[in-house]
Image (cartoon, rainbow, N blue to C red; front, side, top):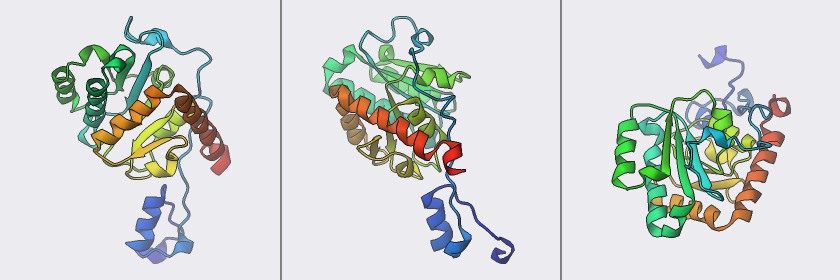
Length: 231
């Protein structure tokens, strides 16, 4: 059927490599086009929408770690819960200012809630359920984490970068194509609680690093992923 196809349009480096290496598509018949992001809808806030958060949830000077996505096994929010719990256990001083928000709903909700309760961090975690105000919720976050076990090109990473958030993401799919490790965030191994805990600690320990990566992520979203720049 390849002779019927004039052009393949993969959305990530990984997909392009698959087409060329596994499907034997000729390189000249492949043209990669990455997803873009609306940098006007997703942008750093003039004033954080803190009124969205539950009253008293985030203390003054607190750091809100967040993720957005359906609560399913492949999205692996349990890794984020484990990493956050490990952070609080290993560095009790962070309990006073670190908070976690999980935006989304799905089949894994009960299992995630159970693990949160077992870890004794229920007062530090907000599970929002399904929401239609994701851009506003993102503006309340300080760090974004995508702990997935599989991804293509993640729109959510692009949205977080456009919002001006440093991103910690697992090394799956096209994540490393979006997040520049140690520049706009961190790339970690899938299912690595220790790596996630370490990267979270880096941001909690170094506000200047957090802000540096946040700014670099916003700039990268504008320069490389704004629809007009790579149509």
